Image (cartoon, rainbow, N blue to C red; front, side, top):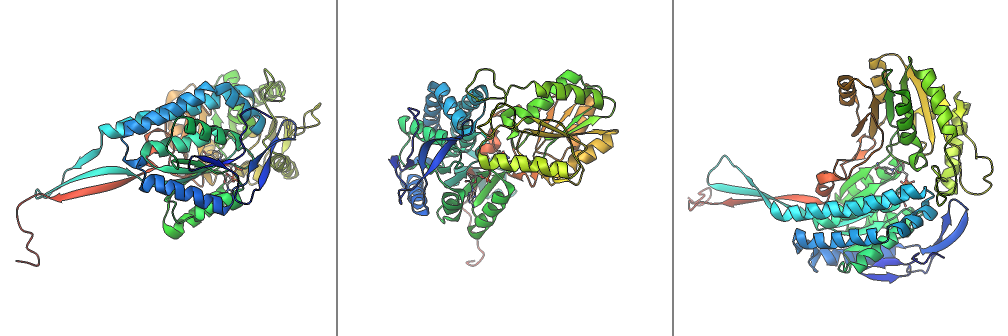
Length: 495
Ligand code: NAD
């Protein structure tokens, strides 16, 4: 067993077993071995966690601290993550399957996210209020920002610690307290985050981590009357449930959901550069990326050459256990997800798609949820392979002839998370960027993500924005304070 693998819930500053003593298995996707067991929180445990977060918010004074005081805790958490970066990255690999170099990058980004929101917490002190000019000189007014309250944060398995950081860091910076539920297939690093926060001296109840099933622990968070805000990243189906649950008592809600993002490549693009970014756009993290550019549209003038080059390079990707040096594609996260991705490839074939490469378990891998990187052509525009998220290393590619056709195909989706364009013509690239109906647009690249820039989707890809100052706004309410600032009498009823 790994030295640092924790198994208990972190509630009110204490480690505790689930109320009914139940646990669930942690499986290493590279070996299919059960490597650990983690507490499966019940609704009762969630209730204890929410009440602790409530007390930390209402009575113990977390929101009353200055931004600078909260920033100190956030920086201590960032330092704590960095001090154990390689060890935590290793945990992420054995839990999620991703190559170590990617995990290492994620963990560094997670630390950076805490530092970034520490900076914004400091700024809250500098701009405590915004004066408002009123047309009636008898009144003065100002707007102030206040934390929303208790936030329930529910996250997916594709970037376990990073997704936790994207929610916990801005929530704590804003002055909210948090109940965090990681995805059941990747609980380990969220528990380490709790341990690091504990070592940083974060007051009890400010951050609580409850591991467990979405249908039990997750459902208990979204149903809890004392949770003020739900912050969710995951599938559209669960996102809808969360919005419905939030509707009952008007909880604040932000949703980061799925996508089927397009990548439009024009004929003036350098073929090797395009191939590199197409690969980064779909094979990074085994394609288990909400913003993955899984629909590639290539100008017919370079389509054949580009496809041949893409297939050639894709076949060279080194597949293996993420802990091995030089591996660029690890296993998918779980047996269940693996079966779903294989089924999506079979359905694509049945609907007439051609497999240009990949599509199978790679040779020499008897164990582990390994899949060859897969390129599909001749994908029907009305098929699921073109329209629905596969969330694996599977890309659909097709030619286009005109700019109008490319933008129409790109936007013909119920999703609108991300989109990318590649062209040497900057004016054209800007025109296409303006035409995409998506919250995140990349020009001449795909996927680089910065904590400073807003992240979120149009259409069914979500509501609200994470990261940057937008991410902090997710956890703040706006209050107006208006003063009758004159000695005059109002004289409406009492003349
Ligand atoms: P999921 O929706 O199945 O699970 C996400 C989280 O919700 C997990 O913690 C799960 O336990 C919890 N959950 C499940 N049922 C619940 C319920 N009834 N009540 C409360 N919580 C519940 O998604 P997943 O399989 O973990 O992740 C894959 C999906 O996430 C993909 O669709 C992907 O596009 C999306 N995603 C989006 C982003 C983004 O930033 N937009 C980032 C990563 C992943």
